[in-house]
Length: 408
Image 1 (tube, rainbow, N blue to C red):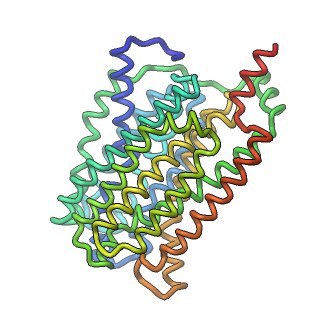
Image 2: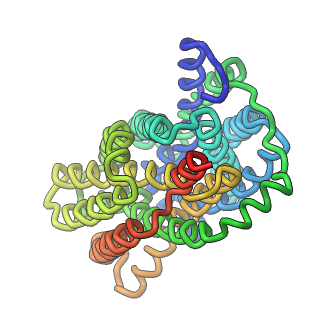
């Protein structure tokens, strides 16, 4: 660790940081109420944005966070973002007006981008060893999934009463802010890159093509997964599986699967490295196939569990991989970019579904699943090809830097 802490202090730091996932997983609270929002407001475009719009807003706030970290400590950014989240999320359903809810969700999206990017960057700063960093990021993402599972279940109970009751769940953000104030370490602002470091980075421009391909894959992965993530309540209603509580249960099963794979991620990545993502795409493909063939809520639950597991696994991969394919001077900005690109993919998912529904002449989700199956299958094949190519010309810049230092 770069910053020395006692074991107890380090544990409190990690607990406080992990609990910021209340903001990162904010969508899990409103998703069980998705069908109720569509029925209440009768405005598909606005409700689409209410559901996935924060992921789009993250595109901008995460990129801004990368710049802001040059001037402010990550602790200040995290606390400020969590306060914004608490206010906008708790009051998100205070007025039964579609545009009011939309505006408050925009503020939630701003806070989500800052929290996710700054939290990941803080982990990368504190844990410099790649395998250790992978383990902590995996646990962070496991906590993210676990947090999502808990708040989704609670939100499902509230959603049965009314769509605007779910916003009460966000009160959990208040004690989290208190913990952050006391236990997050204050690290210095990163500052602007020096001219010397800029010259070194410019001399290693080949990393940009690898980073670009990683971002394309991250975008596609999030877009594919979010089909069921945002529309699970619609599928439940379409297939007659039950009410909002069943939708919440399926969402929760997805986060449980994600939690398990995130815990295992560090060990898996240390063995597979670049090949890790192949199995993520295969998992998405199989989960959507199972969901398409599901004859009842039990099989759908198994499919959602596998889909969530695949996503948590891939999510951890992209956030770790984005720190090792770039020079160390670009780690924070790379994390911010990954946050932004992933959020953009999530955002476009609901609109992609709407477009496909019009093309296929359907109002449901079931007929869209073959497209998700094909897309994830293509992703798996391309990942295999890229992994083979990577063996000839490794993209892991951190390992290259280690070898260069050993040869000096």
